[in-house]
Amino acid sequence: MMSCRDSWVSAERILVVGDRDSGKTTALEELRSSYRANNCEIGGFLALANPEKTWYRLNSLATGESRLAFSEESGLGSLRLGRFFVDASVFAWANAQVHSDLEHCKVVFFDEIGKLELQGKGFAPSFRSALEAEAVSVVAAVRTSFLDEVIHTFSLDKHPYSLVNVVKPIRNES
Image 1 (cartoon, rainbow, N blue to C red):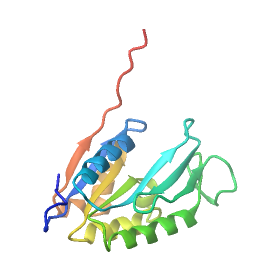
Image 2 (tube, rainbow, N blue to C red):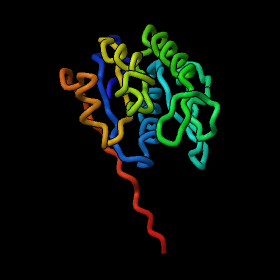
Image 3 (cartoon, rainbow, N blue to C red):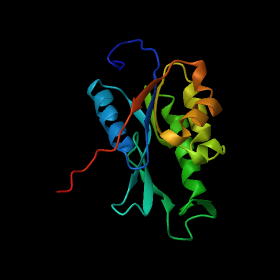
Image 4 (spheres, helix red, strand yellow):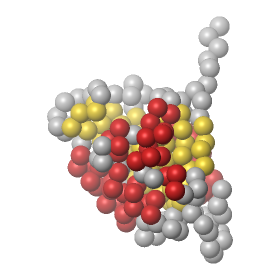
């Protein structure tokens, strides 16, 4: 992992890969802590859910602001993704925030790159911009089932990247 204490650092591309509910967001939080311990300015977003996982909020790592992006409740937005309604205006805000983060942050996080982004929606615009930024490291969560398509769609195979595989822990129910 890079040290932001250094005056010059090369950008990293890290994909945190796992299945649904495997702990990708937890792994992103651990990586975020490591970068913060090295005095890195951090931007981007984590998607945090309620315990029932009936809604998700996008939390800006640069500003601390949080907005509801996905909900099972109708009325959040006209866009549907599986069982969720999606608020496209929240992603417009999030993309604008990431573009701002790219001007001063050394690391940006994306939780997560998936179906929306593969359709050119969600974080797709700011994810592309972040990948093009030479001095910014990009850390993104990706479901295993979308990994190959994400690598192809965003031309990640043209630059070095690392994979962090996250496996859902097995519970011993005695």
